[in-house]
Length: 569
Image (tube, rainbow, N blue to C red; front, side, top):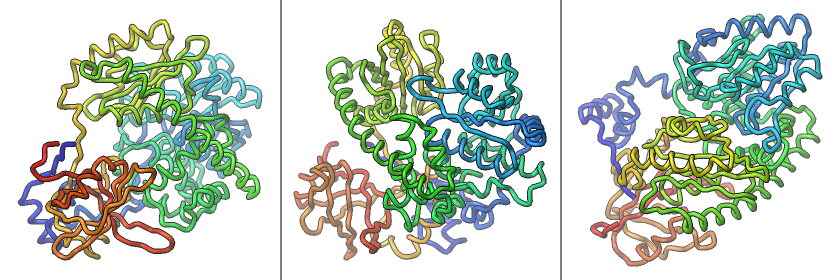
Protein backbone atom coordinates (compact mmCIF):
# COMPACT_ATOMS: atom_id res chain seq x y z
CA UNK A 1 0.00 0.00 0.00
CA UNK A 2 1.25 3.46 -0.91
CA UNK A 3 1.07 6.25 1.66
CA UNK A 4 0.17 9.64 0.22
CA UNK A 5 0.98 12.20 2.90
CA UNK A 6 -0.73 15.52 2.27
CA UNK A 7 1.43 18.63 2.22
CA UNK A 8 -0.66 21.81 2.55
CA UNK A 9 1.09 25.19 2.18
CA UNK A 10 3.40 25.61 5.16
CA UNK A 11 2.57 29.32 5.48
CA UNK A 12 -1.14 28.42 5.88
CA UNK A 13 -0.28 25.78 8.50
CA UNK A 14 1.84 28.30 10.42
CA UNK A 15 -0.91 30.91 10.23
CA UNK A 16 -3.56 28.49 11.55
CA UNK A 17 -1.22 27.25 14.27
CA UNK A 18 -0.72 30.80 15.48
CA UNK A 19 -4.34 32.00 15.15
CA UNK A 20 -5.81 28.93 16.89
CA UNK A 21 -2.85 28.61 19.31
CA UNK A 22 -2.73 24.93 18.53
CA UNK A 23 -0.37 22.10 17.57
CA UNK A 24 1.23 21.69 14.16
CA UNK A 25 -0.72 18.50 13.37
CA UNK A 26 -4.10 20.07 14.23
CA UNK A 27 -3.26 23.09 12.04
CA UNK A 28 -2.25 20.73 9.25
CA UNK A 29 -5.54 18.79 9.42
CA UNK A 30 -7.48 22.08 9.22
CA UNK A 31 -5.41 23.25 6.26
CA UNK A 32 -6.06 19.94 4.48
CA UNK A 33 -9.79 20.64 4.79
CA UNK A 34 -9.55 24.10 3.27
CA UNK A 35 -10.00 25.97 6.56
CA UNK A 36 -8.04 29.20 6.35
CA UNK A 37 -8.94 31.29 9.40
CA UNK A 38 -10.85 31.38 12.65
CA UNK A 39 -13.63 33.44 11.06
CA UNK A 40 -14.04 31.30 7.94
CA UNK A 41 -14.10 28.06 9.95
CA UNK A 42 -17.05 28.98 12.17
CA UNK A 43 -19.66 27.46 9.85
CA UNK A 44 -17.62 24.27 9.58
CA UNK A 45 -17.21 23.75 13.31
CA UNK A 46 -20.74 24.93 14.21
CA UNK A 47 -23.21 23.46 11.68
CA UNK A 48 -26.57 25.21 12.04
CA UNK A 49 -29.89 25.38 10.20
CA UNK A 50 -29.25 28.92 8.97
CA UNK A 51 -26.60 27.39 6.67
CA UNK A 52 -29.31 25.48 4.75
CA UNK A 53 -30.07 26.79 1.28
CA UNK A 54 -33.46 28.11 0.17
CA UNK A 55 -35.28 25.07 -1.28
CA UNK A 56 -36.95 27.25 -3.91
CA UNK A 57 -33.53 27.75 -5.52
CA UNK A 58 -33.92 24.21 -6.87
CA UNK A 59 -35.21 24.15 -10.43
CA UNK A 60 -38.96 23.33 -10.71
CA UNK A 61 -39.51 23.45 -6.94
CA UNK A 62 -42.28 26.05 -7.23
CA UNK A 63 -44.05 23.95 -9.90
CA UNK A 64 -43.86 20.78 -7.78
CA UNK A 65 -45.04 22.53 -4.62
CA UNK A 66 -48.04 24.15 -6.28
CA UNK A 67 -49.15 20.81 -7.74
CA UNK A 68 -48.85 18.99 -4.41
CA UNK A 69 -50.77 21.73 -2.59
CA UNK A 70 -53.55 21.39 -5.16
CA UNK A 71 -53.86 17.69 -4.28
CA UNK A 72 -53.81 18.46 -0.56
CA UNK A 73 -56.55 21.08 -0.87
CA UNK A 74 -58.74 18.84 -3.05
CA UNK A 75 -58.06 15.74 -0.90
CA UNK A 76 -56.84 13.76 -3.91
CA UNK A 77 -54.49 10.88 -2.97
CA UNK A 78 -50.77 11.05 -3.67
CA UNK A 79 -48.53 8.01 -4.07
CA UNK A 80 -44.90 8.15 -2.92
CA UNK A 81 -42.69 5.74 -4.91
CA UNK A 82 -39.25 4.97 -3.48
CA UNK A 83 -36.24 2.86 -4.30
CA UNK A 84 -35.59 -0.24 -2.18
CA UNK A 85 -32.23 0.79 -0.67
CA UNK A 86 -31.61 2.90 2.45
CA UNK A 87 -31.74 6.20 0.56
CA UNK A 88 -34.95 5.28 -1.26
CA UNK A 89 -36.82 3.84 1.73
CA UNK A 90 -35.84 6.61 4.15
CA UNK A 91 -36.69 9.21 1.50
CA UNK A 92 -40.07 7.60 0.86
CA UNK A 93 -40.65 7.50 4.62
CA UNK A 94 -39.79 11.19 4.94
CA UNK A 95 -42.09 12.17 2.09
CA UNK A 96 -44.90 10.02 3.49
CA UNK A 97 -44.59 11.41 7.03
CA UNK A 98 -44.01 14.99 5.86
CA UNK A 99 -47.01 14.96 3.53
CA UNK A 100 -49.20 13.47 6.26
CA UNK A 101 -48.01 16.23 8.61
CA UNK A 102 -49.25 18.69 5.97
CA UNK A 103 -52.66 16.93 5.79
CA UNK A 104 -52.18 15.15 2.49
CA UNK A 105 -53.85 11.84 1.64
CA UNK A 106 -50.79 9.76 0.88
CA UNK A 107 -49.66 6.15 0.48
CA UNK A 108 -46.29 4.62 -0.37
CA UNK A 109 -44.99 1.94 -2.71
CA UNK A 110 -41.56 0.27 -2.97
CA UNK A 111 -41.01 -2.07 -5.97
CA UNK A 112 -39.99 -5.69 -5.64
CA UNK A 113 -36.27 -5.89 -6.51
CA UNK A 114 -36.53 -9.25 -8.31
CA UNK A 115 -39.92 -8.91 -9.99
CA UNK A 116 -39.93 -5.21 -10.91
CA UNK A 117 -36.27 -4.24 -10.86
CA UNK A 118 -34.84 -0.81 -10.22
CA UNK A 119 -36.76 2.41 -10.73
CA UNK A 120 -40.28 3.57 -11.44
CA UNK A 121 -42.36 0.53 -12.37
CA UNK A 122 -45.65 -0.16 -14.09
CA UNK A 123 -46.73 -1.99 -10.94
CA UNK A 124 -46.30 1.15 -8.88
CA UNK A 125 -48.15 3.26 -11.42
CA UNK A 126 -51.01 0.76 -11.54
CA UNK A 127 -51.18 0.86 -7.74
CA UNK A 128 -51.41 4.65 -7.84
CA UNK A 129 -54.36 4.34 -10.24
CA UNK A 130 -56.04 1.77 -8.00
CA UNK A 131 -56.05 4.10 -4.96
CA UNK A 132 -57.41 7.03 -6.96
CA UNK A 133 -54.12 8.97 -7.01
CA UNK A 134 -53.51 11.38 -9.86
CA UNK A 135 -50.05 12.33 -8.61
CA UNK A 136 -47.01 10.14 -8.04
CA UNK A 137 -43.81 11.41 -6.40
CA UNK A 138 -40.63 9.38 -6.87
CA UNK A 139 -37.74 9.36 -4.41
CA UNK A 140 -34.16 8.41 -5.27
CA UNK A 141 -35.22 7.21 -8.73
CA UNK A 142 -37.01 8.24 -11.89
CA UNK A 143 -34.46 10.48 -13.60
CA UNK A 144 -34.17 7.99 -16.50
CA UNK A 145 -37.72 6.57 -16.34
CA UNK A 146 -38.83 7.71 -19.80
CA UNK A 147 -41.30 4.92 -20.64
CA UNK A 148 -42.81 4.58 -17.14
CA UNK A 149 -43.49 8.33 -16.97
CA UNK A 150 -45.19 8.19 -20.37
CA UNK A 151 -47.29 5.26 -19.11
CA UNK A 152 -48.32 7.26 -16.04
CA UNK A 153 -49.23 10.23 -18.20
CA UNK A 154 -51.41 8.00 -20.36
CA UNK A 155 -53.30 6.95 -17.20
CA UNK A 156 -53.81 10.56 -16.16
CA UNK A 157 -51.22 10.42 -13.37
CA UNK A 158 -48.77 13.30 -13.09
CA UNK A 159 -45.25 12.41 -11.97
CA UNK A 160 -42.96 14.56 -9.85
CA UNK A 161 -39.44 13.13 -9.94
CA UNK A 162 -37.17 13.72 -6.96
CA UNK A 163 -33.76 12.20 -7.61
CA UNK A 164 -30.04 12.88 -7.29
CA UNK A 165 -28.56 10.51 -9.86
CA UNK A 166 -26.81 11.86 -12.94
CA UNK A 167 -29.43 12.71 -15.59
CA UNK A 168 -29.19 12.27 -19.35
CA UNK A 169 -29.30 15.27 -21.65
CA UNK A 170 -32.98 14.52 -22.16
CA UNK A 171 -35.35 14.19 -19.19
CA UNK A 172 -38.56 12.19 -18.80
CA UNK A 173 -41.83 13.98 -19.63
CA UNK A 174 -42.66 14.47 -15.94
CA UNK A 175 -44.83 17.17 -14.41
CA UNK A 176 -41.72 18.40 -12.58
CA UNK A 177 -38.16 17.15 -12.06
CA UNK A 178 -36.31 18.00 -8.85
CA UNK A 179 -32.64 17.10 -9.17
CA UNK A 180 -29.82 19.53 -8.32
CA UNK A 181 -27.65 17.85 -10.97
CA UNK A 182 -30.01 18.59 -13.86
CA UNK A 183 -28.99 21.13 -16.47
CA UNK A 184 -29.98 24.68 -15.61
CA UNK A 185 -30.51 24.04 -11.90
CA UNK A 186 -29.02 26.89 -9.88
CA UNK A 187 -29.20 25.07 -6.56
CA UNK A 188 -25.76 25.74 -5.00
CA UNK A 189 -25.13 22.27 -3.56
CA UNK A 190 -25.14 19.26 -5.86
CA UNK A 191 -24.24 16.61 -3.28
CA UNK A 192 -27.65 15.82 -1.76
CA UNK A 193 -28.77 12.20 -1.59
CA UNK A 194 -32.27 11.20 -2.69
CA UNK A 195 -33.67 11.62 0.82
CA UNK A 196 -31.95 15.02 0.97
CA UNK A 197 -33.82 16.16 -2.16
CA UNK A 198 -37.05 14.87 -0.58
CA UNK A 199 -36.23 16.90 2.55
CA UNK A 200 -35.89 20.05 0.43
CA UNK A 201 -39.32 19.36 -1.10
CA UNK A 202 -40.94 18.99 2.33
CA UNK A 203 -39.11 22.14 3.46
CA UNK A 204 -40.54 24.10 0.54
CA UNK A 205 -44.02 22.68 1.12
CA UNK A 206 -43.86 23.63 4.81
CA UNK A 207 -43.04 27.20 3.85
CA UNK A 208 -45.70 27.50 1.12
CA UNK A 209 -48.39 25.83 3.27
CA UNK A 210 -47.73 28.27 6.10
CA UNK A 211 -46.72 25.58 8.59
CA UNK A 212 -45.52 26.86 11.95
CA UNK A 213 -42.10 25.29 11.28
CA UNK A 214 -40.31 23.16 8.73
CA UNK A 215 -41.89 19.75 9.34
CA UNK A 216 -38.92 18.15 7.60
CA UNK A 217 -36.76 18.99 10.62
CA UNK A 218 -38.74 16.40 12.64
CA UNK A 219 -37.39 13.71 10.35
CA UNK A 220 -33.69 14.54 10.20
CA UNK A 221 -33.01 11.07 11.64
CA UNK A 222 -34.08 9.68 8.26
CA UNK A 223 -31.96 12.22 6.35
CA UNK A 224 -28.88 11.42 8.43
CA UNK A 225 -29.36 7.69 7.83
CA UNK A 226 -29.70 8.16 4.07
CA UNK A 227 -26.88 10.68 3.70
CA UNK A 228 -24.50 8.42 5.63
CA UNK A 229 -25.49 5.21 3.84
CA UNK A 230 -25.43 6.68 0.32
CA UNK A 231 -21.83 7.87 0.71
CA UNK A 232 -22.48 11.39 -0.58
CA UNK A 233 -20.13 14.20 0.53
CA UNK A 234 -20.52 15.20 4.18
CA UNK A 235 -20.00 18.81 3.18
CA UNK A 236 -22.07 21.99 2.90
CA UNK A 237 -25.66 21.39 4.03
CA UNK A 238 -25.16 17.62 4.23
CA UNK A 239 -22.87 18.39 7.18
CA UNK A 240 -25.68 20.35 8.83
CA UNK A 241 -28.27 17.66 8.14
CA UNK A 242 -26.11 14.80 9.45
CA UNK A 243 -24.83 16.73 12.49
CA UNK A 244 -28.36 17.51 13.63
CA UNK A 245 -29.83 14.24 12.35
CA UNK A 246 -27.48 12.23 14.56
CA UNK A 247 -28.90 14.03 17.58
CA UNK A 248 -32.45 13.21 16.43
CA UNK A 249 -31.45 9.57 15.94
CA UNK A 250 -30.05 9.36 19.46
CA UNK A 251 -33.39 10.60 20.82
CA UNK A 252 -35.04 7.70 18.93
CA UNK A 253 -38.58 9.07 19.07
CA UNK A 254 -39.74 6.92 16.15
CA UNK A 255 -40.65 3.42 17.43
CA UNK A 256 -38.97 1.80 14.41
CA UNK A 257 -35.72 3.70 14.90
CA UNK A 258 -35.78 2.87 18.62
CA UNK A 259 -36.22 -0.85 17.93
CA UNK A 260 -33.44 -0.86 15.34
CA UNK A 261 -31.10 0.75 17.86
CA UNK A 262 -32.16 -1.69 20.59
CA UNK A 263 -31.79 -4.78 18.43
CA UNK A 264 -28.40 -3.72 17.05
CA UNK A 265 -27.05 -2.83 20.49
CA UNK A 266 -26.73 0.88 19.72
CA UNK A 267 -29.47 2.32 21.93
CA UNK A 268 -28.11 4.90 24.33
CA UNK A 269 -24.79 5.14 22.49
CA UNK A 270 -23.28 8.24 20.94
CA UNK A 271 -23.90 7.74 17.22
CA UNK A 272 -21.68 8.59 14.28
CA UNK A 273 -21.70 8.00 10.53
CA UNK A 274 -19.71 4.76 10.87
CA UNK A 275 -22.25 3.25 13.25
CA UNK A 276 -25.05 4.12 10.83
CA UNK A 277 -23.22 2.70 7.82
CA UNK A 278 -22.14 -0.56 9.47
CA UNK A 279 -24.76 -0.91 12.20
CA UNK A 280 -28.15 0.27 10.93
CA UNK A 281 -27.87 0.51 7.14
CA UNK A 282 -27.32 -3.24 6.46
CA UNK A 283 -30.47 -4.10 8.43
CA UNK A 284 -32.53 -1.52 6.56
CA UNK A 285 -31.14 -2.69 3.23
CA UNK A 286 -31.82 -6.32 4.09
CA UNK A 287 -35.59 -5.97 3.60
CA UNK A 288 -35.17 -4.96 -0.03
CA UNK A 289 -32.28 -7.32 -0.73
CA UNK A 290 -34.08 -10.38 0.62
CA UNK A 291 -37.75 -9.56 0.05
CA UNK A 292 -40.24 -6.71 0.37
CA UNK A 293 -38.76 -3.28 1.18
CA UNK A 294 -42.21 -1.88 1.92
CA UNK A 295 -41.60 -3.37 5.36
CA UNK A 296 -38.75 -0.90 5.86
CA UNK A 297 -41.01 2.08 5.17
CA UNK A 298 -43.65 0.63 7.49
CA UNK A 299 -40.99 0.21 10.19
CA UNK A 300 -39.75 3.79 9.81
CA UNK A 301 -43.24 5.33 9.75
CA UNK A 302 -45.30 3.25 12.20
CA UNK A 303 -46.39 4.62 15.57
CA UNK A 304 -47.25 1.10 16.79
CA UNK A 305 -44.49 0.01 19.19
CA UNK A 306 -45.37 -3.70 19.01
CA UNK A 307 -45.39 -3.67 15.21
CA UNK A 308 -42.08 -1.79 15.20
CA UNK A 309 -40.51 -4.46 17.41
CA UNK A 310 -41.83 -7.21 15.12
CA UNK A 311 -40.60 -5.54 11.93
CA UNK A 312 -37.17 -4.76 13.38
CA UNK A 313 -36.80 -8.43 14.37
CA UNK A 314 -37.65 -9.49 10.83
CA UNK A 315 -35.03 -7.15 9.38
CA UNK A 316 -32.38 -8.44 11.81
CA UNK A 317 -33.15 -12.04 10.80
CA UNK A 318 -33.13 -11.19 7.10
CA UNK A 319 -29.79 -9.44 7.46
CA UNK A 320 -28.29 -12.57 9.03
CA UNK A 321 -29.64 -14.61 6.12
CA UNK A 322 -28.22 -12.04 3.70
CA UNK A 323 -24.78 -12.38 5.33
CA UNK A 324 -24.75 -16.15 4.81
CA UNK A 325 -25.85 -15.88 1.18
CA UNK A 326 -23.40 -13.05 0.57
CA UNK A 327 -20.41 -15.05 1.83
CA UNK A 328 -21.30 -17.93 -0.48
CA UNK A 329 -21.49 -15.59 -3.48
CA UNK A 330 -18.26 -13.78 -2.52
CA UNK A 331 -16.37 -17.07 -2.26
CA UNK A 332 -17.83 -18.26 -5.56
CA UNK A 333 -16.92 -14.95 -7.23
CA UNK A 334 -13.33 -15.07 -5.94
CA UNK A 335 -12.93 -18.57 -7.35
CA UNK A 336 -14.35 -17.39 -10.68
CA UNK A 337 -11.96 -14.42 -10.83
CA UNK A 338 -8.94 -16.66 -10.35
CA UNK A 339 -10.24 -19.09 -12.98
CA UNK A 340 -11.50 -16.68 -15.66
CA UNK A 341 -9.91 -13.23 -15.27
CA UNK A 342 -6.47 -12.33 -16.56
CA UNK A 343 -5.41 -10.10 -13.67
CA UNK A 344 -2.12 -9.27 -15.38
CA UNK A 345 -3.96 -7.95 -18.44
CA UNK A 346 -7.40 -6.74 -17.34
CA UNK A 347 -7.73 -3.68 -15.12
CA UNK A 348 -11.36 -4.39 -14.24
CA UNK A 349 -13.10 -7.54 -13.05
CA UNK A 350 -16.28 -8.39 -14.98
CA UNK A 351 -17.98 -11.67 -14.08
CA UNK A 352 -21.50 -13.03 -14.21
CA UNK A 353 -23.31 -16.19 -13.18
CA UNK A 354 -26.73 -17.71 -12.83
CA UNK A 355 -27.96 -18.48 -9.35
CA UNK A 356 -26.34 -15.57 -7.53
CA UNK A 357 -28.86 -13.76 -5.35
CA UNK A 358 -29.39 -10.35 -7.00
CA UNK A 359 -29.91 -8.76 -3.59
CA UNK A 360 -26.26 -9.17 -2.56
CA UNK A 361 -24.36 -8.42 -5.77
CA UNK A 362 -23.71 -4.78 -4.80
CA UNK A 363 -21.93 -5.87 -1.64
CA UNK A 364 -20.10 -8.60 -3.55
CA UNK A 365 -18.90 -6.03 -6.10
CA UNK A 366 -17.45 -3.94 -3.26
CA UNK A 367 -15.69 -6.96 -1.78
CA UNK A 368 -14.23 -8.01 -5.14
CA UNK A 369 -13.06 -4.45 -5.82
CA UNK A 370 -11.23 -4.40 -2.48
CA UNK A 371 -9.87 -7.95 -2.85
CA UNK A 372 -8.31 -7.33 -6.28
CA UNK A 373 -7.69 -3.55 -6.09
CA UNK A 374 -9.55 -2.71 -9.28
CA UNK A 375 -13.10 -1.83 -10.42
CA UNK A 376 -15.56 -4.71 -10.36
CA UNK A 377 -18.80 -5.51 -12.16
CA UNK A 378 -20.82 -8.43 -10.80
CA UNK A 379 -23.87 -9.68 -12.74
CA UNK A 380 -26.57 -12.14 -11.68
CA UNK A 381 -28.48 -13.75 -14.56
CA UNK A 382 -31.95 -15.21 -14.13
CA UNK A 383 -33.43 -18.18 -15.99
CA UNK A 384 -34.68 -15.89 -18.76
CA UNK A 385 -31.19 -14.56 -19.44
CA UNK A 386 -31.79 -11.14 -17.88
CA UNK A 387 -28.84 -9.95 -15.83
CA UNK A 388 -28.92 -7.51 -12.91
CA UNK A 389 -25.49 -6.01 -12.36
CA UNK A 390 -23.74 -3.89 -9.76
CA UNK A 391 -20.47 -2.07 -10.30
CA UNK A 392 -18.00 -0.44 -7.91
CA UNK A 393 -15.04 1.69 -8.94
CA UNK A 394 -11.80 3.29 -7.79
CA UNK A 395 -11.20 7.07 -7.79
CA UNK A 396 -9.26 6.96 -11.08
CA UNK A 397 -12.27 5.68 -13.08
CA UNK A 398 -15.60 7.47 -13.58
CA UNK A 399 -17.83 4.42 -13.70
CA UNK A 400 -20.91 6.19 -15.02
CA UNK A 401 -18.99 7.68 -17.94
CA UNK A 402 -17.25 4.36 -18.67
CA UNK A 403 -20.60 2.54 -18.76
CA UNK A 404 -22.05 5.15 -21.08
CA UNK A 405 -19.45 4.20 -23.73
CA UNK A 406 -20.71 0.60 -23.68
CA UNK A 407 -24.38 1.43 -23.13
CA UNK A 408 -25.50 0.04 -26.52
CA UNK A 409 -25.11 -3.44 -25.02
CA UNK A 410 -27.10 -2.58 -21.88
CA UNK A 411 -30.85 -2.57 -21.34
CA UNK A 412 -30.34 0.25 -18.88
CA UNK A 413 -27.91 1.67 -16.33
CA UNK A 414 -27.57 4.46 -13.79
CA UNK A 415 -25.55 5.61 -10.81
CA UNK A 416 -22.50 7.63 -9.86
CA UNK A 417 -18.79 7.79 -10.76
CA UNK A 418 -18.01 5.30 -7.97
CA UNK A 419 -21.07 3.01 -8.02
CA UNK A 420 -23.64 1.99 -10.61
CA UNK A 421 -26.29 -0.56 -11.46
CA UNK A 422 -27.26 -2.02 -14.81
CA UNK A 423 -29.49 -4.46 -16.65
CA UNK A 424 -28.05 -6.61 -19.44
CA UNK A 425 -29.17 -9.57 -21.54
CA UNK A 426 -26.97 -12.66 -21.29
CA UNK A 427 -26.49 -12.82 -25.08
CA UNK A 428 -24.89 -9.35 -25.00
CA UNK A 429 -22.63 -9.99 -22.01
CA UNK A 430 -19.49 -10.93 -23.95
CA UNK A 431 -19.80 -7.94 -26.30
CA UNK A 432 -20.28 -5.60 -23.35
CA UNK A 433 -17.36 -7.16 -21.51
CA UNK A 434 -15.06 -6.83 -24.51
CA UNK A 435 -15.86 -3.16 -25.18
CA UNK A 436 -15.80 -2.15 -21.52
CA UNK A 437 -12.48 -3.90 -20.87
CA UNK A 438 -10.90 -2.38 -23.96
CA UNK A 439 -11.91 1.15 -22.94
CA UNK A 440 -10.98 0.83 -19.27
CA UNK A 441 -7.65 -0.81 -20.01
CA UNK A 442 -6.77 2.33 -21.97
CA UNK A 443 -7.95 4.67 -19.19
CA UNK A 444 -6.29 3.02 -16.20
CA UNK A 445 -2.55 2.59 -15.72
CA UNK A 446 -0.89 -0.09 -13.57
CA UNK A 447 -0.08 2.70 -11.11
CA UNK A 448 -3.81 3.34 -10.62
CA UNK A 449 -4.31 -0.20 -9.27
CA UNK A 450 -1.86 0.21 -6.39
CA UNK A 451 -3.89 0.65 -3.18
CA UNK A 452 -3.35 4.05 -1.63
CA UNK A 453 -4.02 5.59 1.72
CA UNK A 454 -4.35 9.35 2.11
CA UNK A 455 -2.67 10.60 5.30
CA UNK A 456 -3.19 14.02 6.86
CA UNK A 457 0.27 14.13 8.36
CA UNK A 458 2.96 12.51 10.47
CA UNK A 459 2.86 12.93 14.21
CA UNK A 460 4.26 11.56 17.47
CA UNK A 461 2.08 9.61 19.90
CA UNK A 462 2.64 12.43 22.40
CA UNK A 463 0.57 14.68 20.10
CA UNK A 464 -2.51 12.71 21.21
CA UNK A 465 -3.96 14.59 24.18
CA UNK A 466 -7.33 15.84 25.44
CA UNK A 467 -7.32 18.89 23.15
CA UNK A 468 -6.48 16.71 20.15
CA UNK A 469 -9.41 14.39 20.96
CA UNK A 470 -11.81 17.35 21.37
CA UNK A 471 -10.63 18.63 17.99
CA UNK A 472 -11.37 15.28 16.34
CA UNK A 473 -14.85 15.32 17.86
CA UNK A 474 -15.53 18.83 16.51
CA UNK A 475 -14.19 17.80 13.11
CA UNK A 476 -17.03 15.30 12.59
CA UNK A 477 -19.38 14.16 11.26
CA UNK A 478 -17.03 12.23 9.01
CA UNK A 479 -17.71 10.83 5.58
CA UNK A 480 -16.82 11.41 1.92
CA UNK A 481 -15.34 14.89 1.51
CA UNK A 482 -14.50 14.99 5.21
CA UNK A 483 -13.06 11.59 6.04
CA UNK A 484 -11.81 10.81 9.52
CA UNK A 485 -8.18 12.02 9.41
CA UNK A 486 -5.48 9.38 9.09
CA UNK A 487 -2.06 9.83 10.61
CA UNK A 488 1.36 8.23 10.33
CA UNK A 489 3.79 7.61 13.19
CA UNK A 490 7.31 6.29 12.65
CA UNK A 491 9.65 4.08 14.68
CA UNK A 492 7.13 2.73 17.15
CA UNK A 493 7.97 -0.12 19.49
CA UNK A 494 5.72 -3.11 20.22
CA UNK A 495 4.87 -3.58 23.89
CA UNK A 496 3.88 -7.04 25.05
CA UNK A 497 2.74 -9.87 22.81
CA UNK A 498 0.55 -9.16 19.73
CA UNK A 499 -2.56 -11.36 19.48
CA UNK A 500 -4.54 -12.68 16.57
CA UNK A 501 -8.29 -12.27 17.06
CA UNK A 502 -11.51 -12.78 15.08
CA UNK A 503 -10.75 -16.25 13.71
CA UNK A 504 -7.23 -15.13 12.94
CA UNK A 505 -8.24 -12.30 10.58
CA UNK A 506 -7.41 -9.35 12.83
CA UNK A 507 -4.50 -8.41 15.07
CA UNK A 508 -4.41 -6.56 18.39
CA UNK A 509 -1.22 -5.10 19.90
CA UNK A 510 0.19 -2.16 21.88
CA UNK A 511 2.58 0.44 20.52
CA UNK A 512 4.99 2.61 22.48
CA UNK A 513 6.93 5.79 21.75
CA UNK A 514 8.71 8.14 24.16
CA UNK A 515 6.94 6.65 27.15
CA UNK A 516 3.47 6.88 25.61
CA UNK A 517 1.55 3.62 25.03
CA UNK A 518 -1.64 3.07 23.04
CA UNK A 519 -3.57 -0.08 22.18
CA UNK A 520 -3.91 -0.72 18.44
CA UNK A 521 -6.16 -2.93 16.37
CA UNK A 522 -5.67 -3.87 12.75
CA UNK A 523 -8.76 -5.30 11.06
CA UNK A 524 -7.89 -7.81 8.32
CA UNK A 525 -4.19 -7.12 8.93
CA UNK A 526 -3.23 -10.49 10.40
CA UNK A 527 -0.77 -10.95 7.51
CA UNK A 528 1.48 -8.48 9.38
CA UNK A 529 1.59 -10.63 12.52
CA UNK A 530 5.06 -11.97 11.83
CA UNK A 531 6.38 -8.43 11.40
CA UNK A 532 4.88 -7.44 14.76
CA UNK A 533 6.59 -10.25 16.68
CA UNK A 534 10.04 -9.60 15.18
CA UNK A 535 10.85 -7.00 17.80
CA UNK A 536 11.82 -4.32 15.28
CA UNK A 537 10.45 -0.74 15.03
CA UNK A 538 7.35 -0.27 12.87
CA UNK A 539 5.63 2.58 11.04
CA UNK A 540 1.86 2.83 11.37
CA UNK A 541 -0.89 4.52 9.35
CA UNK A 542 -4.00 4.82 11.52
CA UNK A 543 -6.97 6.77 12.73
CA UNK A 544 -7.36 7.77 16.36
CA UNK A 545 -10.67 6.76 17.88
CA UNK A 546 -12.44 6.22 21.18
CA UNK A 547 -13.28 2.57 21.78
CA UNK A 548 -16.34 2.03 23.98
CA UNK A 549 -16.60 -1.40 25.59
CA UNK A 550 -18.67 -2.53 28.57
CA UNK A 551 -19.22 1.03 29.74
CA UNK A 552 -15.56 2.02 29.50
CA UNK A 553 -13.97 4.37 26.98
CA UNK A 554 -10.36 4.33 25.86
CA UNK A 555 -8.30 5.83 23.07
CA UNK A 556 -7.08 3.31 20.52
CA UNK A 557 -5.33 3.40 17.16
CA UNK A 558 -7.38 1.80 14.40
CA UNK A 559 -4.59 0.71 12.08
CA UNK A 560 -4.91 1.00 8.31
CA UNK A 561 -1.42 -0.20 7.36
CA UNK A 562 1.79 -1.48 8.97
CA UNK A 563 5.22 -1.03 7.42
CA UNK A 564 8.72 -2.04 8.48
CA UNK A 565 11.25 0.74 7.70
CA UNK A 566 13.56 -0.17 4.81
CA UNK A 567 11.66 -3.39 4.13
CA UNK A 568 10.40 -3.69 0.52
CA UNK A 569 6.57 -3.63 0.32
